[in-house]
Amino acid sequence: MIFLLAALGILGVSASGPIIAATPGVPILAMAFWRNALGSATMAAPVVVRDPAAFSRAGRHGWGWSAVAAVALALHFICFMSAARMTTVAAATALVCLQSAWIALYQRLRGVRLPWAVAGGIALSFAGVVAITGFDLGGDPRALQGDVLAILGGLLAGVYTLAGAKARETLATGPYTTLCYGMTAAIMLGLCLALQVPLWGFGPAGWIGILALTVFAQLMGHTVFNHLVKRLGALTVSMLILLEIPGAALIAALLVGESLPVGTYAGMALIMAGLAAVVRGQRAAVTAPAQEKEEAPLGAD
Image (cartoon, rainbow, N blue to C red; front, side):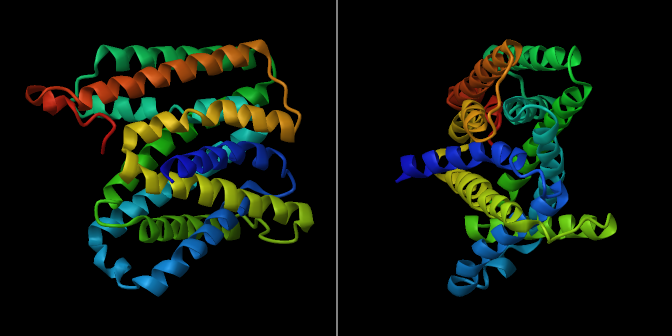
């Protein structure tokens, strides 16, 4: 069952970028609002029926960290979804997956010493970033802007992951995703109203794209991985998410006919190899002997 959920999660997150790129008639903010509003409503229904008191038991800790996660998630969606329409889906996905490297760097700032494998993996990942952005620098300036947004989106995804882990200390998957998605939807609604972004009138193709994004990326992707992180651990889930990079490239090729230059393939390969080294290095730190356990929390918040 766990392997089936993991496969669904990988398929879900891999479909995110291609669906966004294939639905250009819907504004980014409106699409982000609907995917979170529908996702929150879907997750809220069983919680309200089975355990309506779950939200009150969350307390300040659960609500507070859910709010932090929601702000980070809202900004992440704005950056990544914009990037998916400005640069290639494959490049945007690879760059946003740098969240594992950002989390490791955050831990370093907290005083945790990075194992050599983690430090080397981060360096290799950022070499991939240079390969992708350097290629775009000599091509379409809009693609380079998309690369920068995707990198920022990955940083925000790291904040979202860390804050979500804190919220999950007192919240189960259902209540947490209901709160996080609901607050993210509220942020997006406020932005849509303030900027006069339309929330409907998109036509059948637009609504199909919104529903597909909700089902695949929001429910099958984000929600499944939010559930699996407690069963498999953050490091294993981080490794599984790396499969989003080739998955998104394949789906984008089939769905929107996207072809990639050689430089982008090379950059994606470097990022995947580097992030794999980061995750493996973190795993080694977590399983270190007892006398070295002060170094173990890398990426496990």
